[in-house]
Length: 246
Length: 180
Image (cartoon, rainbow over the protein chains, first blue to last red):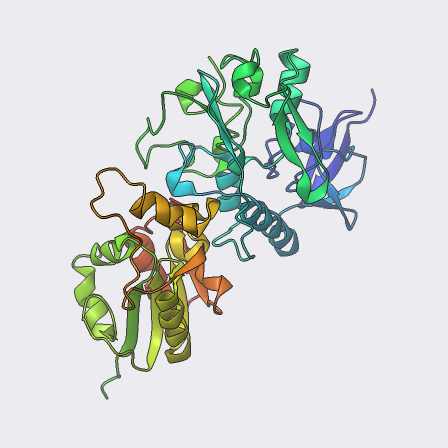
């Protein structure tokens, strides 16, 4: 019988199978590592850097780093918490995240992760970028102000829906989400609200039309318990306040 | 020996007074607070001139020249300055006008608005001039503490003020931290 392989995460032994990432092994063991661009149904992207952990003293993304026997992984240290908080603060000032005016507030993964890492204020200077809202589709609206470039909709539309509706264009600070049509409008695509791409957004960038503010403040997904307990909005069914279609 | 009361000032800049409403939501806890603090300039006292204060609580972001002036005066006279509520922290709803040029905003409201009689952009010298963009407080002066919420609940304000006044480290329970 082969010996079970394991690494330690904040002093706790976490078993893993060959080929698993640190994130996958931690999730399987019930240990939460905060993340935004990671969704276990998709190939890891490694872009948001929120799942940063110390691996034998080096900072690496838990979602892309393969687990290895005997690794010492640190996640909930003061230093890492501070780095994560900084990443969240940069995400907030880079877009226009007006929580009081967003239908996703209370059931937003970006907001919930920011609560989890203890972000009280954005700290940095706001960019206030001017980005459009696309309401051309009969069932869905895209508010580009809230996009954090996690590419989950890109991956879902390409890999699951087979429609390739979304892409990210440009580099660095110029990078932005685009819709693959000559007009750039969602209404000109075969995108449907039943697509996987409509169920994975961790923010309020992709929203279902004709509904909003359905759950009263105090009863929303992350109002009472943190995301580490509740789970990701994209993995929870709509009947439980999440985005996944039943 | 009678301990001297701590002096607190409050004001609303580009806000909706919702945070002040939340402060009033302390209800009977206000009596307890009043035993420990004395209000200086505040919409609740109507004192116009800001004195030397231990603590300043500011609601709202900075949208015009007068806001800048008041904020800098608060910074100069308050030992500890606290940004309270979404607008003070990130500009909030008023900062949604940052998506547009100021000229377009003014023309939309005062020239192209529906049902306007004698449309004109107000330019009375008593009206503070608007800034091109709305800004959160920390982009103008040093802010010592931040309390998020739209508005922060009375419970959050109570926890925060108590911890601050008693010199404890600030630690709000999960349910008292909200951005909306």
